[in-house]
Image (cartoon, rainbow, N blue to C red; front, side):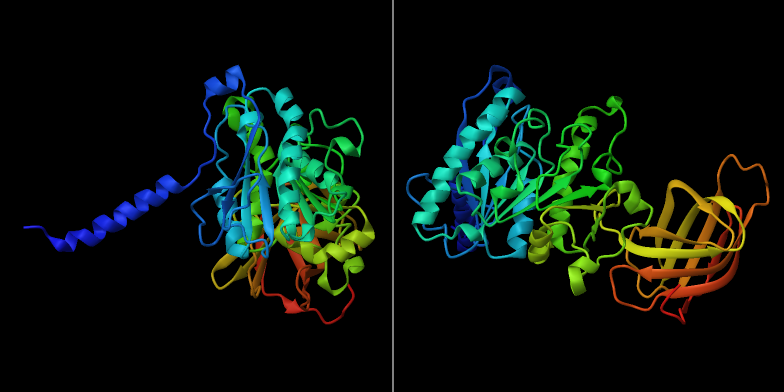
Length: 447
């Protein structure tokens, strides 16, 4: 006897299998394709909230009804694919973008053209840009606004985005360049790379400027994560394999995806150099008004008007070694009684949670009766700070076994929230020993 209770699950499975076969996928190549070379073929895969896990291949001459041109459209453009493999981060970025807004997400699949030889991939960026330009123009003819278009390009994809933007005389709404490729783009004029004139707003992140990424500024704001070079938890030697070559470069994508999830935000500080930033010389954000310094990532668009007024801005921030990458920034002012050299570690405690900031990027020189300002970057945000722990570590060249740093006053100011600073008076910090205390609200507004 046929068991009808099994019919519904079978029908559902059939529908799911049908839909799975109906989904269009990113081009999958193998090492063989990369070795013999491929010819450029650009495919556009549409994802929406209704079809977040199922790509729709878009025609270049006849727009799909699934592409709702009344909604904003975000293009994701990958970079060089030496082995022809699919970027591991595509799904995460697509999902995160759809989670943030009801938009059209179009994955630009130019794997055939980006695989194999880097030199041919560079040559294909302008060819792919011509193809994309025709599609965007088709969208425009059917009512899409150029201002509602956002292109997110990684590595070579950043420059490809710029070429498309240049073809529209910079009228595209926004281009985000994630560690734009450096090799073969260091020379030549702005027309040969991503630059601020390519869109109404161009934001750029640098994470590997000493190897695969570009060194120069290329946006209305250029962010430098951890100075733009070595990223935390990335391999330092070639013996780590392929991760050594791509970890710093690809971190730019991971940081941007993290900014989409809104777990926390990375506040970035305009500064002339990374060293000045670490030294605490760039904690003022008066030029940005009540909004304060811009945050890195998707939400930097909120600072667009200020950044366009400032024209070109270099901003720095540091990150944790893994997600959530964002840190919380404080200004730590110290007035000392004696002269010493060393490093400071600070901890914030709240309801069993601990946040740590290690200030060891350079040897600190404390002078007698002299105020010193430090930038303390904690690995997480804890509120309220019920207790504070400080540890002083003298420089290794110090031979005195009982080195002590006497602190007349410390003042801890949250740089990201308008709240009253915390103070403490008269502390004795012994060599490499933690001192924990309860802070009190500072009585005065000035140190």
